[in-house]
Length: 561
Image (cartoon, rainbow, N blue to C red):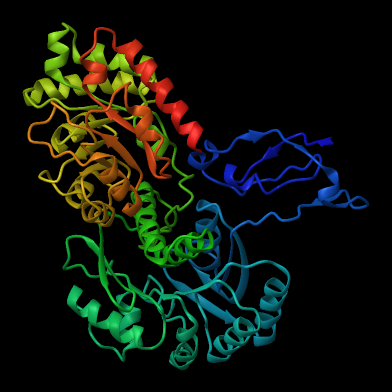
């Protein structure tokens, strides 16, 4: 046996297949600090005989290491806001390897496009052959295809070297309204679209594809999506960011059978150059990782919203169309915004403590004292549920609890009260079926906050996902006295919702030390933890009860994984 010094892993799930080599260091791309925090050093013992080593050159090749791979076929943007440069950054931010085929070289900046040089067809063909014949490509994403002949070269290459999925972003007009391709390319799209798994035009591009049909409403976007789908692609996403009559940024997704209106908050910023390229690249990256099409589209849309909000105040260049920062790396991050340092981690749902003011009064302790004991005992997330508190009192208590939670690295959510969450800058909210819809909560709170939704049925879980929730709370699993008229769904109901949910799930309702193991032992991959109220806060020593519960839940989670 030979030992490996260390592997600096792309992502821990990718480490397992990398077996049988010594002293190999895998270097990650330039990720943001957010992603770098998730990386870790892994020490492995490996058999040297299972790898192929380039002894003379001092290099080592890794066998059977499958890294998700996107090939982008697009133009180069000298200002690095769009095109190939945007695609590379987007794929890096989504933890996917990205290779490139350059179709044109553009001179552009934040003012506009000053020049375009189309590369010869044989140069494009040679690039395609070099990558597709040698490297395992999962998904091909296209951007600027500047001529009919380039489109034909691409189609020929894709027939010769099939890939898992093709994402077509029909780039025709830049963000600054500069025309990038001629009308002959439209004929090429007629050949390319039937090969595409998804086509992602914005409103202007969709209009051009349909012969300059005006698109002024969501209904128009739906009709356009159907007409473009008739051209052959399996799915169509029409981006509605330019539909300024809508309060939200609404995209229309059509899979040939159903329409989905995907809503997000509008971000007030001029730094929008490259958003279309980045969105398509994110979709390609998620598909390369094995996501379903609708899931990939939703993840990409949420990512764009987050990156736009993060980049809204950046100043790069003097023109009206600044680039944004999909790597989330250019702006200094500080502790004043806890969520900017720490994206939602489903593992935080493991021991989910929900406070109760009446229980704390019964035991003669303040809410802050109760929360401190819970996080010291191992609670991984806190929800302040103070039904009887006055607003001013609730805000002051929330601020005190937020300070305690963040000192332990634990997120704090507010139950129901969006106003309180905004006032104290909490990490998010949890809402019920009769409270403000998650979509509206997202609009008010922005893309970075955590939003949870209570659900009892698969249909409610699906709606929570569509509305942009981060997780769902499912129950009551067992009878409980902490919530009046609460319908019990049992373990069978919990299993049904978990199997249907695309979001992480935390079980709630009558759960404590005696039955938490039974809940976690269901072994459902998206069941991430248990939420408890009286099992912690209606006890003399919260710290001890939390510690014991954490031991039971974490032990059960490990035993089923």
